[in-house]
Structures are given as C-alpha cells and as structure tokens.
Image (cartoon, rainbow, N blue to C red; front, side, top):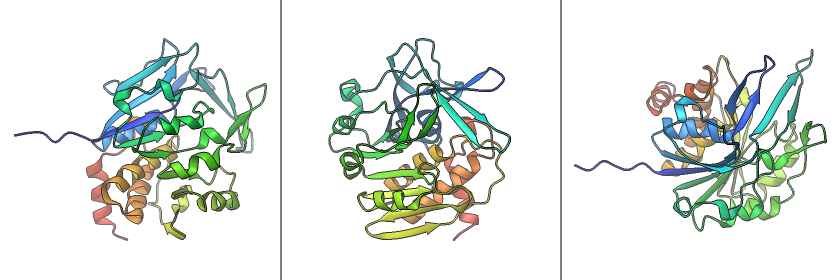
Length: 283
C-alpha cells in the first residue's frame, strides 16, 4: 500500500523578528504564518528566506524544510500604538534580498509558489524563476516604504504592471491600501484574480470582470497577528484543490477567523475543524 504524497507549497520572503514593548520578540512574517496553514492543511511547505545566523523557526515549524540564505541581520519590526490606538510601525535592520538565482532547482516546479515580500526584498525577476508553476502573492511588502528612522508608510507598487499579469492569484488587505477601493479596483482590472480581505466584513473577489462578496465567520479575536497571511495560504490551497472561488474564500475566511481566536501560528486550525464548521454552517 502506497501513501499519497502531499503537494509542495513554496514560500519566498523574509522571516521577521517582531519586537514587543517588554523587550522580547517573536518570530513572524508571512512565511511563518502561511507555513503554519500549509502544514495544518497537510501540504508540504518549503520556505526560502534570509536571516541572521542565530535565526531559529518557532518550535511548531522546526520540522519544515527551511532554505535560510545568509544575512547579517534578520528583518525586525516594531509596532507602537498611541493613546488613540493608531499604530506606527518601524522597520530595521532589514535582511538581505532574495534573488531569482537564490531559488533552489528543487523548488522551481512546486504545485504552488507563494511570494511573500515584506520589505521590498523580492525583485520583479523573481517571477521568472518558477517556469509554469502556479504563482501567487501577498504583495504587502512591495507597498511598504520607510524613512531614515525606519518609519513605515504606504508607497507605490512600482512593478505592479510587470508582476500582476504573471500572478495567478493575488491577495491584499483593504488596510494595505489604506481603505482606498480605487487602488484595489485598478489592480483588479489588471489581475487574473484579486482577493481583498476586509477583516470582520469578510472579503471581496475580483475575477473575470465579476465582483463577489463572501461573508465572514464571526470571531472573538485573541491574537489578530497574521490573519491576512493565514487567509491567503488557505485560499491559495483550497482554490488549487477545488477551482471554486466562492468556496475557497469561505474556507479561508473560516480558517483565518479561527486562527485569530488563539495565540500564535500554532493556533491555526486543521482541515477537519474547518470542514466541520462549514458543514454545520452552510451558506
């Protein structure tokens, strides 16, 4: 009797050290949260990142295949909230970039490729490194800019025309574009499939001229970090499996909403838990 081999899901982007106000830090970044989803959904994650020599993945993900390229530092973020709850994010130091030539040959024909930029670390030519593999992205890191003090703000996606047509599926948050639907709609007109997550309002899918709203699963948030990354990985996988946009978005909404009700990447639900909820709460 043979065992079915899992599909391979390659993630490319910076892992991060997220500094807390008490001086401690946690390991984060899209590659961390999305990899947790890939593992929980019984696919085979492979991560390509750059980090300092002292980097170690969180215990839950130590059995994952990590290709860690050398860098003097690990990308480090700090989030500071003022009395009104507004966040000022700073970044620095920033790890070395990841180039097309850095991609191992064994990773170039995976079932799904997920580009996970956080700090402009992926050049546009990265999209040429994977042949005909299905290329997906969460482009938030192509939108970030920062000043000399490391203060992060929204910038222009300079290579949007070059990259969007090459991406099979793209997921952004409406917060990535500061609630400006005109930006999302402009990108949707040039994208194959664009999904915009909206937190407690669910998500909106743009595909082939259609605009589809998918409702959320009500949640009681405990740790909202990484919610968009969880959604994206769940959506990419489920759409690969079903070719059904609405079903995939519903699956991803439920997965993300369950994840934020627990702490950290290890709190991502497994496939059985999500499917049980979907069966009990049909739309």
